[in-house]
Length: 457
Image: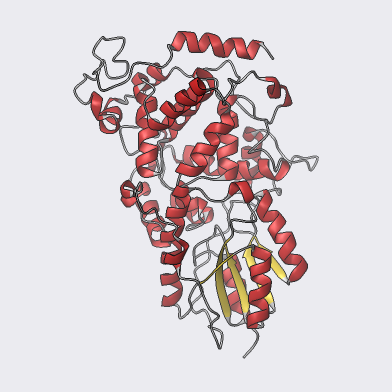
């Protein structure tokens, strides 16, 4: 029997359209491995919500592998050290993986490549990050021309089927027990509301099928938080349970406003291209002049109290509070409400966007380094392609415009008895229930303070 090959899984937890798996399976016996590596990312180790998702996704992947006569080996530690030890233990001659673009994974790939024969494959994006360039061969910094150039290269290659068989090694190495990793919360079990999700490749494909039923109406429904207008594919795409090529080929001919959705898949590619150019984009402003922005001092107890109110959905702004409570309960927030909640933290409370990014990193099941950083900097106006600082979203007006009454009533039960007209701003209509907090800052005062901060730089 030939020497086995190691298949290194990370955020590519699927068997279909899995380029690294296809290459490994063609060489002979395969040892699939996932390494829980909290050392390589350092301060970017997975947050709590992502760990919940990871547990269930790994269980699903292992079940799919066992259907093919294989299994998933679980190890914990620094990726290059674990892979080198596993190769020595099993006699594996090569490691296959799908290439990743977070700065810590690029460092890990370099470290593994110094120890072992590492073969990296593309397959997690519509086009390999860094491959879509200007006529001068330079990477794009602005989304619109990037998307125009990427769109010309579409559609992507048809997604490949999973291998018919995955040969097993003559002897399986030892594996950790998934339960021993303690990825799931214990007491209190804050993830009870996560039951609406089905992590894994099967769940991802079900979500694609569900989205197809209303994909043609996407542009008119995606901003309405009270209805199911989003695709909810973001965590499945983040964990690689479904490839963007698979999504593209299933959705592209749905008609209607599906091009708007495809552009959002393109935005995901764009975000990866940004962190490829600026690896520290999750920690540094894209525009240096915003380094002088006079954020309020996060060490202040008053500022911390307001941040705490934001995280708990107790700001007195119903649309913001509904979104933050949905996030805590389900690990996900409606896309329009994410922008409103982020803008509120940045512009109304004048709290550094990085504090919000850290909170989302811990609480989102789709927490993604590139997408989170690009989206937060877009809202803040600090990014290389972003809104102007002076664009300050009016949460009360946004709530009314996008008919969020039903959404608020669901997530903020204190306001269940308030009319559709008054629920967006119960303070203004003098019908705020005692159980619901008054606004922590008036919109006009917050707006003037934010504009003054902008003028200071």
